[in-house]
Image (tube, rainbow, N blue to C red; front, side, top):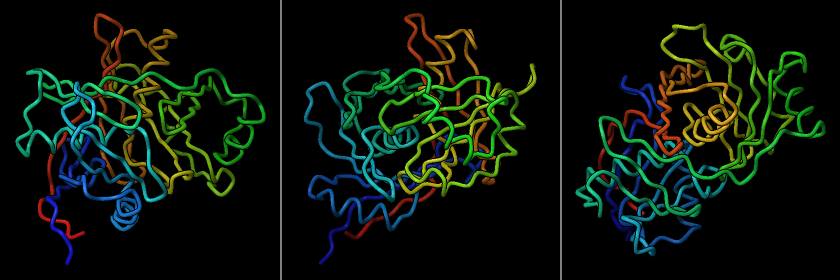
Length: 279
């Protein structure tokens, strides 16, 4: 007989109902093995499904495993916020009053409590500009001429991200990529809105490498791009990013910088579905 696990589906990164990025969260999943978790994640067919477990680190409040339809990720952004929201909503009592410490395959990730939950952008595993052999197939698949690129960078904090910066948000929204040309890629494209707009940038993220052609709203990419843009002086303070318009979503990601230079990534989190998963 299958076992019933408490289950919620959390809408992350949008204050508008059903306009953010959903994450499925399964509580008390310690008895499940990786193959079962992967099978469940492939069936939910969301960009990510997470499984909450008892921590093995004495500093952590809970442990999470994060799966896409195509494989496990050591870290991901909207699943971090959605998992923290679900754990707190279920009565989780963090060791600290102002933050939750999540243990993931990438290490410990602080999640700050407040009007919005926000996670501390983790250290990047790979940085630096892409070489021509890496960049050329990406631009060809995106349909972007090299002269339209303002900058590009490896911004990998676990999933394998790289990013291309275009001049305008409209150029990003107009992209119609052929992902067959980059089957293993994890790539973001960002462009600026005019000064005074509600959002500073439009972001789109494509992840065919893990079975997600286009991620509706991506926290991990915005985390590492936030570190890149603030460290290079492209931005010099807090800002907001819009994502998901081409998919009918209304994602809004808040990027903030604390006095120690730590980048935080925040957004709305709301439970939309609640019930049991029979596994």
